[in-house]
Length: 196
Image 1 (cartoon, rainbow, N blue to C red):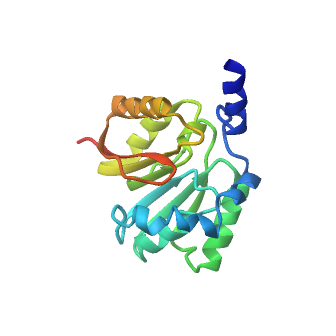
Image 2 (image 1 turned 135 degrees about the horizontal axis):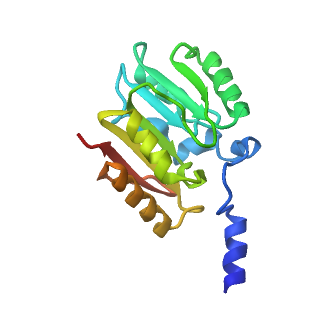
């Protein structure tokens, strides 16, 4: 049974940190909108003038729609560990004529490295790649405004229900409150709020 579980974990890339940039084309494509429409998922949380952090932005699947939602007076910071990802984000921002609203930001493995206060943070299918979730969620908390929101979404194919529950316990321990668990296909999700 252990051998079967090990093979299953390897096939689903469990326990492997940081999805390589070249693999993102397999799930960051036009067909994804059929089950992960960014506007449907995010429009009720992001408003014109908002400052938003897209953590683990990848190639900008959510970044570009967020830039439209924040409007001319808002801003989205696309944070990622891989410069190749951010190069694609910058290219897509120019192509969509949204480069004035999008700031690409290269993280380090240990820190997001943002000091600006955020209205909303998105961590979509990436927290399982973080080696120290307590440190990561503490840093997210430190940059959220009072009543700021974090939408944390994890993929069911990589993350077990138990692992997601552990992540939520860590989030609560650092000072985030769970206010909702929206339905997002193929995912575990939680909307968290910074306590006052």
